[in-house]
Image 1 (cartoon, each protein chain N blue to C red):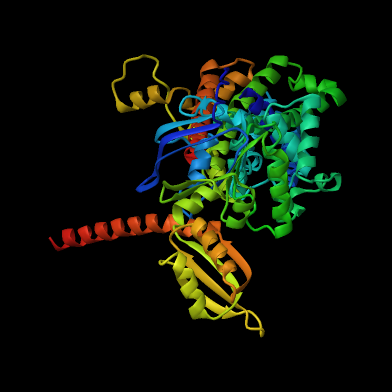
Image 2: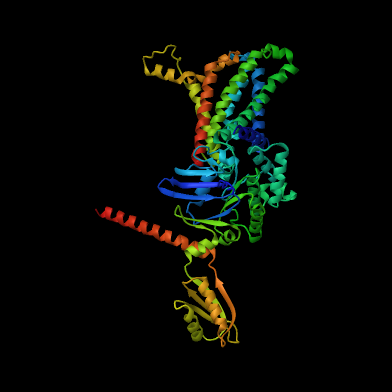
Length: 344
Length: 260
């Protein structure tokens, strides 16, 4: 039996810390990212997302901890990592007086591309980002925000990077332009690892394999959407559309699960159909068992049954809430301590 | 990382060539210098100027530098900082030293091109009026080399001061005014320092100490006497190289500080 060696992770971070003056931006975060994964990096403002991305792209050094990107140890060869990655900074500042093609040529040369390889890579990057020839001849200052973001992404893809770090790539874009970014990531899925920071949770939910949620410089949640749903939402919500009354349905449901609560009931139409929303602590299997039981009851007609899975927004709020409360509590403690000191 | 230096140098020269401000300032500078040079050589016999007449061109360029250099350097980093493109630049495999060195080299090369443009005036005199040129000493090659070396060494340090000024602000007008002030101050220190430098290592008064510490800064502009006659005064050249190194190091540290 041959055992294939496990591929090295593209990103390995261990106990990474960073402080800006009095503010501890990162309080020792650890995570790893495998080849070809698309990772959503989430967190409220000031959580430390951009700091982490800047450290990983070799722009700023960490105070302590270990970080390896594409096998390069950032503590030893901070600048070397920039040869292996593409980075789109937040707000994506670009020189407005240059034409798109001039800018990409400049960036390609800065990244060490020459001759036919330079031409080919520019052509491929323009193609991946849907920047047609007409647009590539225009001045960057005259482009819309969406096109500017695409120019930034094209720049990040120039050197066939193994890792692309995108800091808020779709901020301020309309849904059509955001879709272009998602399409680009889908096209490169598996070949390129993406680390994507965003506040647009629906977008992260749609395109990321895994999420890392940061709050107050700490990782508060990490995993696939399913894993996060299991970890943070301990109640299963399901809805039943049936032709029955509230009392009898609740009685039938309680015969299977006594803890099941009716959260809401509302009429669906004039025929008497009603939508009932229940909540149980016992998971999806019990919800399915309830359905099986309900359909067997002769006087009860079930038209619809649906288990509601919590979206990323709910998970995000749950994951960050605990951390916020802890930090808030610590803040209150500290301010209380200060007040006592002042009194003394 | 040296690849970054050449790419930045090329791009910066290109941006200087497409900047209208550079053309306007260069045109006025060369035009005024040309008019001044013409009147000077016309009235040269009536003046008590003891140096070769070609040295007037070097001095004209030197005293015009506080007005010219800011136009070449004020945009370089201040504008990048204002637009935020400095951060984007740092995402490429290029370090702060390459960025600063590339930008300095570009403005320095442009300054040397302007100097070459200024030296076209005596060259034209040599071609059109060879007899008069000979009587003015324009046929002495060492005067040309000495004068141009003088400009090269001082221009290098002026450009470094300009790059440093541009690195500490986001506003290019502030950068321009700051580099004008610093270059003028630097010229004033060299022009108005007095006394003779100490000839020995031993000093008996504070003045001796300052004279020793000042090195070639002490009555720095008087060193044109050497260059004008074709003597390359090595301490002056080394002094200007130290100034270049000092201000470019400060600018690099400033970029590193912004990055962190």
